[in-house]
Image 1 (cartoon, rainbow, N blue to C red):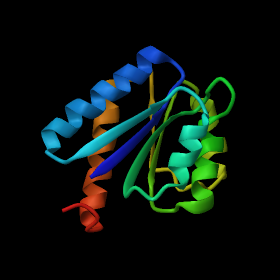
Image 2: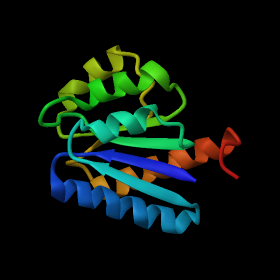
Image 3: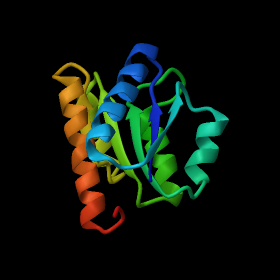
Length: 136
């Protein structure tokens, strides 16, 4: 099972992310669960620490009270295995994000064919998990 943890403060884009995950996972025939957050709430922090198996994070780079990079940094304090995808409208943050060496899987621009690109990134993540024999 794959656990998707989506953190996005724009409710329209949050729903779009969930729709993209559902559509992509339907084609892959893999069990999954989606956790959704609009900010860095306590439940998100608890979920980061919890061992629930495979996690794929989709983090908005700029949230109301924290950045997705800060959340990624918090994830990497205890978890080097989860996949982290950053969705952004701010491509100028990419060098900063890469400089932090957070082992980010990919970046997806919200401006350029977002639905198709996020679906491709999720499929690439699934492919990598299968190659590592983490998914059967």
